[in-house]
Image (cartoon, rainbow, N blue to C red; front, top):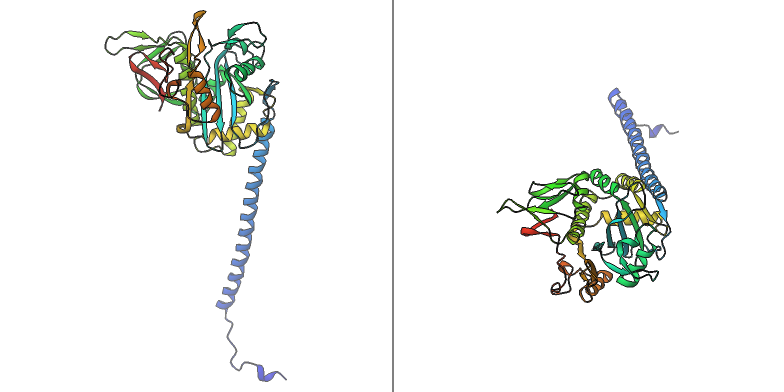
Length: 368
């Protein structure tokens, strides 16, 4: 009945056509397998990254924490002010501070400000016992008194507290492969073990960095006479050098971005070397680490609180009434800090210079 539909000249289905049809089918199946494999691989990577971030958050929750009155959580994306206390002690022992520094990090603006507080700064003790050095409030009884003075007497709200021992400085610098600083002239400190005779952009390892940030008796080599000349500003130069070392470390800390593997290593370092306040949760730790890693060192401003000699003891310091107020206002508002730690238009004549760690002969140690 359908004979009239038959093709009177049917095509010849030779072996070549059959091979082509079979190969086309194989290619389609291979493409489907490859697409499936790519999908599985992408899914595995996403799960792996998510799992690593989950592991990072879990491990960040295990960093040693202490209760500090006045600290608490900050909303994501909001500026955070961290009181950083660098201690002489290691292995999480409470020790007298080498460094007292405030860091204001604004992830939204991508900026940060660093304000050093000299250890010899005289303040009123929170317990009403009278004047005392600010460094005495950080040890051996914890940071409650230090936070109270910074907030009420200096006028800077503190969100969180981070303490790191000297061993942590060495470990972090070595972990990032060293930091680069610019050296104008040979400098040494026989007390701290510092000796830098190579000029220009120099890479320091952990031990060299520690000797630099602990240096209170720096001397520079006068190229004209060949004599070593002492730095007259002593501790004020030291705290300024500490900030520049921190800026140099930030430049290396964020190299290449904080991918999950790098972030996990940073948390690993924090587990060994940091003590933080109990209000700094694991998500806060991760957010802060990522914000710090994203900073451009050029966006970091820094200063030392302007000071004058303390009237009752010229070996101690007091906050300069006018200049310190201007610097604190700039720090709290998130504006750029006045140059040299002075008020707008220059530091007052009676305030010791706190320019970026000046040394005799115009020598400067700075970030490269």
